[in-house]
Image (cartoon, rainbow, N blue to C red; front, top):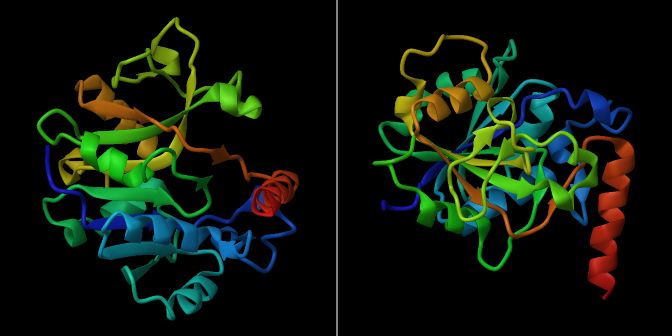
Length: 242
């Protein structure tokens, strides 16, 4: 096992189109759940995990994100503007030199999850083994998220850490990809420059037998629509009131 990652990349460049009208004048990562933006929740989790330096990519209303992060000093933030969207993996590859030869976290700024029995990112770091893995995914049981019951991403057998992509197995996909991942820079070798998505890297690692997963034991919230966003805020408010 290796030392915990000290660097991370946070994906914050998307349009948040499905969240309109909430995102007409506010980038989705800056939408507030229970008094804190989703972007700050991601950065707080990284700080809790001991991460010191984070790249945040921006595009849609990127000036608002850059302005918001001016007041944040821990972890240290580097803004990576994308005049043209590079998709999830392309944005990271553009900044690959920042990470050297060390593994790093990648988080979505618009995904909401909470810790389980231990801080989620620490659990992932403890599981990470660079000798056996090129990428480690956080997966969450579809049973906890009814909207995804028929649309799981991976089948993960009980006690296994080897996920199988839904289309590669006759088993029913029982987990969804929850957002956080640890990535080794070598996974980007022989990948295209410019725009491409992380799913290509997931498939590449799976074919090589170097894709691994941790099952998330905290909570995960689907905030893809204004209705789901409002419902999530209600859930958090109720938890607070208890």
